Picture 1: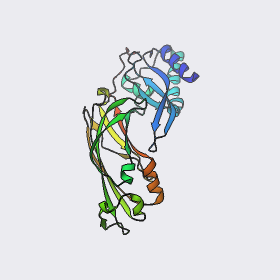
Picture 2: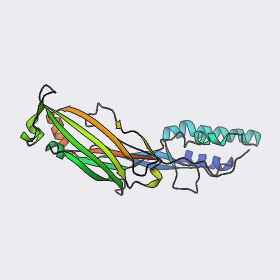
Picture 3: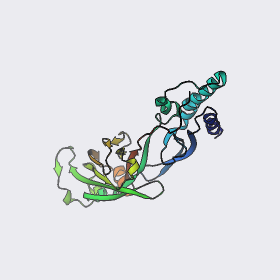
Picture 4: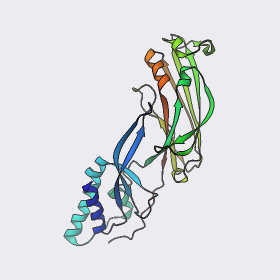
Length: 261
């Protein structure tokens, strides 16, 4: 993208050569297992440190960051001096503090076929897999099921049924518990959370509380979802997974470049 090359050139001209931008592809795994990719901009506060970066949307880059940098360059051309900005504001001006600084550590895939077969998962530990198929940790979780009669209140004996197909018109309550994540990359332990989209598209994303500075964060999250058992619901359970995304944030650090006056 020419605008990225121009912005990098301007940064060098105004003495902010440590700041660097490059395009990247961010891939999101949906609950049905499909992948959606989008172009984003990765910004490095220190180009020599490729381990620490933040992601900003293309719109935020073209509509905000580019004009911030260009305005600084125009001031520099006019006066011959770089305006005396507080380095504390560099993150906002150049974009890393405005960015979507949450990074997807990876995803846990819960096969919903077990729910269709009315099989609970009292305790499990599944690998966290990133978009490249690499294991980036482990996540403990459990799934408990309650079957309710047509009135959505009266509990039924779940062992009397083989699959949910026998329960059309009744209700299923799913209790999802997200527990401890282990073996995640150390750089993401500054802040960690998990989130997922429930089966019902009308419901919003569900997120755990943020855990800070924990190498093995215990999310201690319980989510309960009650669904009317329909043919569409049954079919969805048979052929899809529930995707739990484990997210991490890298602790921001000030660039090591000298202050320009």
